[in-house]
Image (cartoon, rainbow, N blue to C red):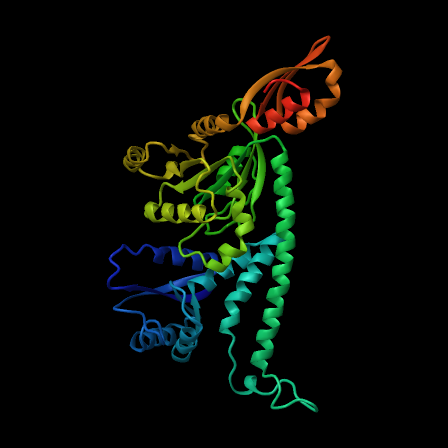
Length: 414
C-alpha cells in the first residue's frame, strides 16, 4: 500500500464547509493507498506556477522526506506546468484528483467498453502532461533527405498518443452503436425500465441485489466498486416484470473526460421510465452529493424522467436523524438494502409511477387473427390469457403507443 499525503486547497473567499477531504481519503484507499497526513491550505488566489505557493510546497517536501511518502495527492485538478514545478520541489509523485479517479476507473473497468472508455480518458489526460528533458529531447529520427535534427522523442510520443486516441475513439463509436442496438432491443421488449442512479458508494449495487434476491452485481464498501452497468429482470408485487439497471456512481468534480467517455453508459438514465436516486442516509454531506447527482442527470438530458429519492442505509443511522430526514424529505422512500426494510414501499411507489405510462388493458383476439399473436407478445406484456372457443381473452400491460399499434394491426378501436 502506497503512503500518501493529501493536500486540500481552498480560497479564503470560499466559506463553504470542506467535506471533500474525507472523500479524497476514500478514493486513495480504493486506489490502494493510505493517507498519512492532510495539509489544508487557505489562499487568496491559486498560484499559477505551483498552485499552492513555493513556501507551502517546501513544507510538504520536508514532510515527504522525513516520512518516506510515495505520493502527494491534490484535491483539485492541477495543470501540467504546475505538476512539473511541484515535482521539482517535492521529491515524490504528484497526483491530482482527476488522475486518482482515472486510476480507480482503470482498476474497476471489467467490460471491453469500460476499458476502452477509461483508456481514452487516461490518454486525453496524459497528452498535455508529456514532457522530456535532456537525452529524452534528443533526435529520434534523422538521416539523408531530412532537414534539421529530425523528430524529437517528445514529439514522437505525443504523435503516438494522438494516434492511439483516434483509434480508441473509433472503437468506442463502434461499441456505442452496439450499445444503442442493445438498448433499442430492450426498448422493443415490452418491459418498463428503471435506472438506479446515485452518488458513489450509496448502495446501488446492494439495492439491485436485494431487488433480484441474488448477488449478481458486485457490491463493496468502496468508492466506484462497480463501473459497468448491470441490467436484471425483477418481478414486482403485482406480478409485472421490469428491468432494473445499475449505473456508474457519480462524484463531485467528476473529470469531464470521464463524463464524456462514459456518456453512452450514463445515458441509461435518459431512456428509463423511472430513475431511482439512491442516497446514503448516513452521509454527512447529503445536500452536496444530491446536487452533484442532479447536475449530472440534467447534463444527460434526463431531467424530465420521473425520479424517486431513495434513502438507503437507514439501518445504520440514529432514529432521531432518520426522523429528521423523513420530515425534511417527505416524498422520499426510506429503505435498507442490506436488511430489506422499506423495499415494499419502494415497489409500490415505483409501480405507481410506472402505471402512468404502462397501463393494464384487456381485449378479445378472434381465432381468425391468431397469426397476430406473436405481434401482440412482441409489443405488449401479456399478463394473462384465457382461450375460449371462438376467441382468446388477453390482459396486457403496455404503453399508449404500443397498444395503439396493436389495435391498428387488429383493426380494433384504440
